[in-house]
Structures are given as C-alpha cells and as structure tokens.
Image 1 (cartoon, rainbow over the protein chains, first blue to last red):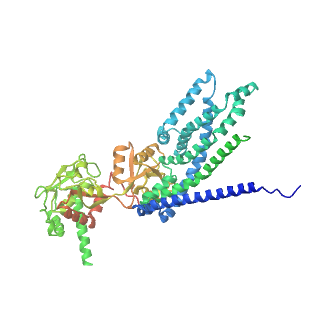
Image 2: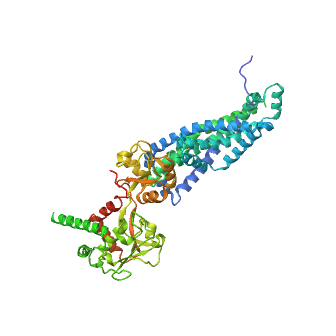
Image 3: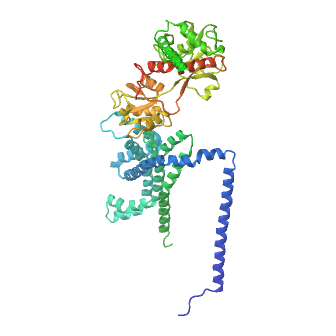
Length: 281
Length: 291
C-alpha cells in the first residue's frame, strides 16, 4: 500500500472550483436577504403611520402586562388541542374505514359515513360550536356535560370529517394489487386492512394529517365562544382594557411557538418519507 | 362652616322637594323652586327661557316609555326615574309642573339633525362624540351602574350582597365594564365566562351554563322585562370603571343647553339625583343595591 491518496491536479481544481461556487452563493444569498430586509424595514418604519402602529401594536409594557393572562389562556388551548387531536384522528380513521367497506350489506353504513363527511366539512365550525355549546344545554337533559366538553365535541366532529377524507385518500392510494395479494395469501378483510393497507395508507398521508393538526391548534380557541377564556380571548380582553392591540401580538407569538414543534415534525416526516421512497434509486 | 351648613340645608330642602316632585307633582311648592332657580344666574331667567312655546317647557320622550324610567307609559305622572328627573330639572329652570308639556319623540328622531319638537328630550341617551355632532347634551344626569341578573330559582336568585356571588359562575360580554365589574368587584372563585355578545350570554344563562350575568342597568331591565321569560334582577353593583353617561338631549347649539346643564349639576350636587336614583332604580321593582 502506498502513501495516502492524493487527488490529481484536475480533481483539486474541481474541489477548489466547487468551494468557490459555494462561498459565492452563500455571499449572494446573504446580500440579497440583506437588501430585501433593509427595503422592508425602510418601507414599514418609513411609512407615515408607523409611530401610531408601533405604539398600538408593539408596546413592550402592555405586552409584559398581558403576558400572564394570555399564557393562562394558552394552557386551555394546549389541553383542548391534545384531547381533540387524538379523538379527531381516531374518529377520522374510523369513518374512513367505514367508507371503504365493500358489499351491499354495508350500503347504509357507507351512506351515513359519506353524509357525515359531506355535512361536517360543509358547516362552518363556528356554527357547529354554537349548535353544540348553546343548543345542547338548552335541551336541559340530565347530565349534560359542560360547555368545554361540548365545544370540544364540536371540534372533534368537524375535524373528524376532514381527517376521514385524508385517511380515505391514503387508503385508496394503496394499489389494488396489494389487496389482491393479501387476500390470495388467505388474510381476511380485517387482517388485510390492519396489516397491509392501513400501515401504508397512514404513512402516506402523515404530512396532511399533521397539517390538519396544526390547523386544529388554531381552531380549538373557538370554544371561547361558549364562555371559557382561551389565549385569543384573553388577548381580546386585555386589548379592550388598554385600547392597545399588543396583547394580540403576544398571543400570535405564543401560537407560533406552539406550532413550531408540530411543523418541524411534519417537515421531518415528509422528508423521511421522501428519502425512503427514493431509497435505492 | 356657615356656608357648609347652608349648602347642607339647601341640599336637604332639595331632597324634600325631589320627594314631593316625585310623588305628587301636582302639589307644587313654587317659592322653593324659584328660590333655588334664582341661583342659576341672570342668563337663565327662571321661567323665561327661550323655549319653543314661551312660558312652557316642552319635554320629549319615546312612546312607549318603559319602567323604571317612566311608569304606566305616562311621562306626565312624575313617576319613574326619568320623569322625576325631568320635572326636577324643569323646576330648577323655573317651570313648575303645570308649565311642563310632554311630547312624543321616537328615539332615533330625537338625535337626528334638523328642527326639534322639544326643548329637551330624556330617553336614556348615552353621551357619545358621534351624537354630539348632531345634538347638544346636558351634563349627565345618570352614570350607568352594572347590574347582576339571573333566572328564577338559580343559585344566585335572592342573593343580597356581593359576597353571596363569590361562588357563582358569572358571565359578561367581552370588553365591557360588566366584565371589569366581575373581575374587580365580585372576584368570583370560578373564572368569569366571557361571551362575544349579550345574546350569547343570555342564551348561556337560559341554558344554565352560567348562574348569572352582569350587564348595565338599562340592559338588565330590558332583559328581565322583555327578553327573558323568568329573568330577575339580583341587584346593582357599586360604580366601577368608566361608566356610560346619560344626558338630556337638546337641539344643536340650543340656547338652553347651559341652563339645563347647570340645573342638572345643581341636582347632582345637592343630592337630588342620588335620591331619585335610590327611589326609582333601586326601590321596589327596581334593582336593589348589593354591598
């Protein structure tokens, strides 16, 4: 074995060239970002109403003052999100499986599942919450749960309809030959679904599922219609007290921070799926 | 000390007068009225103001006139808070009850620009900058108080003090003085429930998801009287925040505005308004005061 491998002059030239190109593109990206950033800052801060906007949207003192209340409201959002997301995913998967049942016997089940997804994707969420949180207690039935539970049910029912369609898209994207192969191996319909179809389906639709979860995160706050105070409501109250919009901005920042982990997971799952799909090519 | 005693004496005299005017407007004590009105200065000659009909004071309000602001839909009977206030103001201006005539003015017409059919109008008008562009307002004769309402048989039905509301689940509209009243005066152990509108809050009260609502006093009377089937007023809370103010409406740039404002200010200073408020808004069939 001879000494260490030394690249040829041509190869060294190529490496140097690539390095130069890399440095150049980083510098160019930095420069163009700086130019655009400066333009934006100048355009915003140079506008005639900037002072007014700054005092009514970016008031540090009011931000500090409203932060505890908004954070307390956010805790409600987080609890609602966790419970509603889990239940909505379960409901969505269940409905999707019902919709893909075969055979004439299951027609009513399929029809009802279809009707459900049509109806609840159509009705605006806010109206569903009104119907659940203000309508159901009006029946005065014994043991009616609190408005938080009813509002949560409205969210689960609405998001369940969306998620059902996402799951169904996943199930239908599994090639029929897979089903045929599974059945020919002697697997029952249930076993086929459980071991062949669903694992592939769920993996394929993971990004849109997580995407809907991020959307749900912002919509859970709508239960505040029925009385409980969520982060946006807390910000609204603080805004009304001070005649200043900064609390809304505080809530927005908290929501972004809350969404970041979920968004990161979504990106990572998408990337991993893409890498796996392209493995070996 | 002498002057203070005089003021006190004047005050109690006015209180008596108010009581008299409130209960039996026909039995006028004209000398007292002139005596107190003469303090208004030469610009506001008692009984000789530049009114629509000389020598008479024409006061407008809507028909129907609702309790507790008026009684039996008859503004001229001197009963009800606003009727009593109107007669007291008239007296301060040197117009005894006999010289007061009432005219019907729909709420929206009263504050519309254009010629007026009244010298002043009293109809629970809150003073706002927008309205000030179309009409004149006197000094406020009433600062709106926050009031707790509920439905018959609820947890807070019959509560007589603020401490009794501590364990109740109370609701209010977002961004209102009502919500501020819950958080600053009642400080309930359960967090206040907040609603987008009073309609949502009302529904929650009917559904029993809240035990009581805090609304302003006029709304409380309207909700329990007209909107809720079995609504009851629990009581008024002490003044909190920046209250809405009711003022008498006058024609834009009316020559009477200053005189009327002065009369209202005097009624406030000598305690007449407070007495009228107690009599007509907190008395029987009214909203008792919660301490």
